[in-house]
Amino acid sequence: MAGLPPSSSVLTSAAVAYTHYLSFMVCFAALVLERRLIRPNPERSEAVLMVITDVVYGLAALALLGSGILRVIHFGQGSAFYTENPLFWWKVGLYLSVGALSLYPTITYILWAIPLRKGELPQVSEGLAQRLRWILNVEIAGFALIPFLATLMARGVGLGSP
Ligand code: HEM
Image (tube, protein in one colour):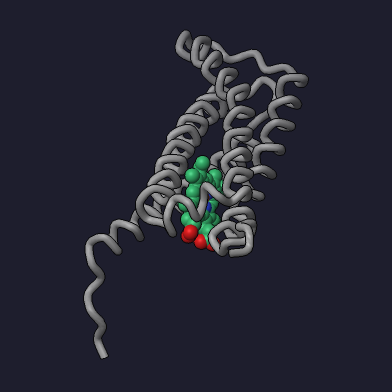
């Protein structure tokens, strides 16, 4: 038996949820790619790819935040369902911490753009490559933990008993 066609608000809600998951996957993929690419004194093509990957990561992180906020305000289970749950704030805190950590790599890549534009190669010491690797490891671990908090939060774990 055919059901009713989905209403436009259901489709919008699905699109926002999809944006949330897709941007999460893009962020994760970008971090893993950066982690694979980082090495002392990269070739020009590798350095350019790192810069592009970081821009994609930044845009996807914004889409992740925007779609998350939309889900809290419009398309979720009511904003109080989230804001009253400490797990939600752990999730937001973890997202912001990963974002703060990524400032160091991002500023590093922005500085690479200066020599790259002049046709020169960025100077990347073993120490800097090691530091970036370590930061990316922590970011990847943080990102992997956030969906765990999300799945608990979505099921009301962490809310006080009624
Ligand atoms: C501050 C940023 C974020 C906000 C405000 C936010 C908000 C939300 C909201 C409201 C939901 C819907 C929960 C429900 O169905 O009742 C959700 C689901 C989800 N979020 Fe986020 N989110 C944010 C960041 C992230 C990040 C960074 C990730 C992944 C790394 C993520 C992964 C997920 C997943 C996997 C779900 C689905 C949970 C489930 O239905 O089992 N979110 N998020």
